Length: 163
Image 1 (cartoon, rainbow, N blue to C red):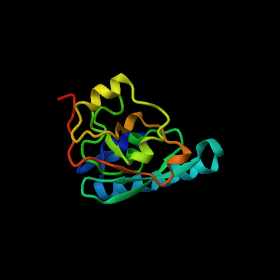
Image 2 (cartoon, rainbow, N blue to C red):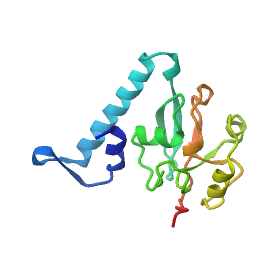
Image 3 (cartoon, helix red, strand yellow):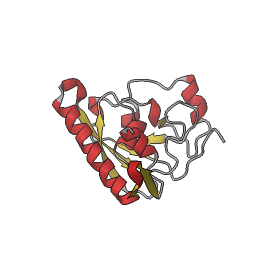
Image 4 (tube, rainbow, N blue to C red):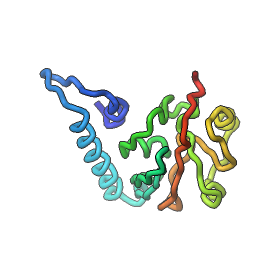
């Protein structure tokens, strides 16, 4: 199973593996944390096009969670790859069919985003909880070098536009 697949299952209490071995959630979390660190180390060692930056997610409780982000990945995948526990975040897996990966940027960072939101993204954002002028969907934001150290805020609540 891929790392992404394991991350999708992280909220389960226990996992049944081949040969009837059972691994508890804490063991899976340890595995995922190691895999995330290895992924970024590999990216750093494989050349300049796979550099990493640090993105800081501010969760719903106000806790700041630093995450290693590969240049070219999107902010939804960064949260998943770093095993950041944001309940409901990315429910549609980045298919632009919900608004659960809604993030709020600082104004100065929002103005530096390379791409403007598409009409489809704007439609989903209209359904997001806590929408503001600097809101974007994490699945639509591609990580660039200049994002190193940026903070992105996860709104206090989420609304799944598919419901």
